Length: 203
Image 1 (cartoon, helix red, strand yellow):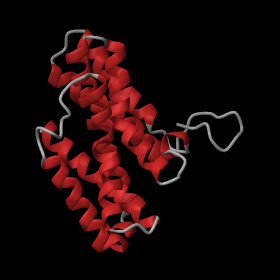
Image 2 (cartoon, rainbow, N blue to C red):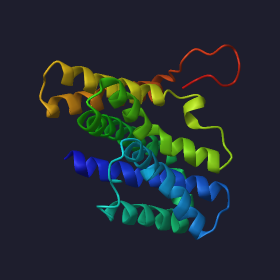
Image 3 (cartoon, rainbow, N blue to C red):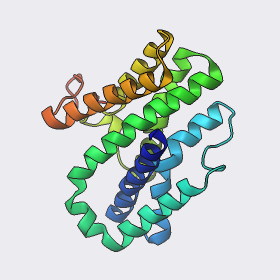
Image 4 (cartoon, rainbow, N blue to C red):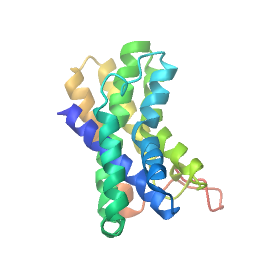
């Protein structure tokens, strides 16, 4: 089940990248490149940091999903933009899966709870940061919605429950649930972290 949710998250994150490419008026190649960044960027950084085989190299279906999302957006961008608000909820599911999947892999390979939480957040948000930087936008984690904070909460819950000896399945679903709850609350009630009065400073 987690694997299928992971694929779903990759597809949704790829859509977000392709929509950013559409806003910038890029060509089809640009759609594919920018779609790749949020979809597989965070997981790639995680695997490189862990000196582990990059996940999509051994399973090219991730790349095909990204290409499919880019092509779909290229031919149907106006229709997708009309439901972009709804995609935020799908994005929240992807964020929740990515943060615990990244934390679980990092914990298994490093044995460090701190590294697991950090790389759980990296897996979930680094690709989006790269996408925004390439598109010359202020990264989402520095603007308005609680996003990285939700990923941190999910990874922390997973690592904490794992340390208590709970089964991996329980820890993973509880962590994903915590991330989704925080992100969903931000979407519904407009939660954000306090800033020092500037326009940025929220995460």
